[in-house]
Amino acid sequence: MKKILLLLCTVAAAGHFSAQTATNWTVNDCTGNPHTLFSELDAGKVVVITWVMPCGACIAPSLTAANTVNGMGNPNVVFYLVDDYGNTNCASLNSWASTNGINATAKFTSTAIDMTDYGTAGMPKTVVLGGGTCHTVFFNVNGSITQNALQTAINNALTPCTGVPETNAIVTGAGIFPNPATAAVAALSYTLTRQSEVSFELINILGEKVSHTIIGEQAPGKYEHTLDLSSLSPGVYFIKLRAGEAVETVKLTVSR
Image (cartoon, rainbow, N blue to C red; front, side, top):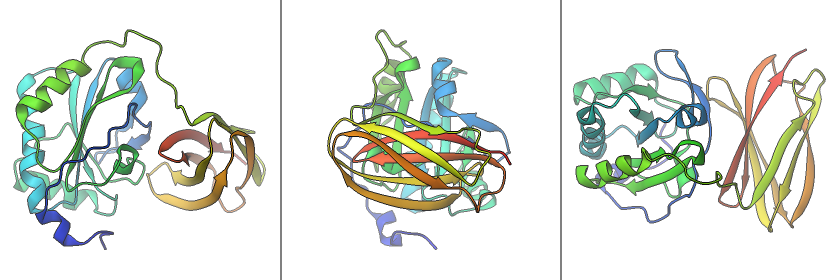
């Protein structure tokens, strides 16, 4: 069942929040091919993402995004169609896209690709990510979009990063030890540069949320949190650490 009211699909509202840098993820698309966002951006690709319910109000913006990307004919510009909360199966998402003529480079249904990393949720929400190793957000709009604005953002995103990649100003140095983890516990460490509300999600390789832990308000400083891994099967997981509006993703391998 969807986490928001279907009524939202009839309203298109522009989002004014814009994250400065993208949030990394590693997820398999609906055909089973793996994708790591930062690896693709580092290789010079521009990634256009539209999150959909899917619903009627999502069709026109998704078509605009798909047609703009496909019309450019640039193999380094890709369009990813993503289910909003990762609770629509691939068969349904593929059918919706096919019925409405939305030709995406790849389609995803995974909670790991989280639109709230870029502010408020939208129906739909579209972002343009690029700038090489700077992982910059060039476009962040909820609801209706125009081809001219989107194409301008894509062209800007194709420009290589000319400076040192921006770092997260709130949370830094996130890591897990030991990693790979061979015991029932591991330590998640991180540093906060200012007081923030901290929480984290544990996500499996399929993009499914395994757990959500709220740590609470923490002052600036270095922290270490013990992770209980006793119930996890061996495999690859991701810790999505949130501190205020900042998000840091850390890969965890469980091997025992």
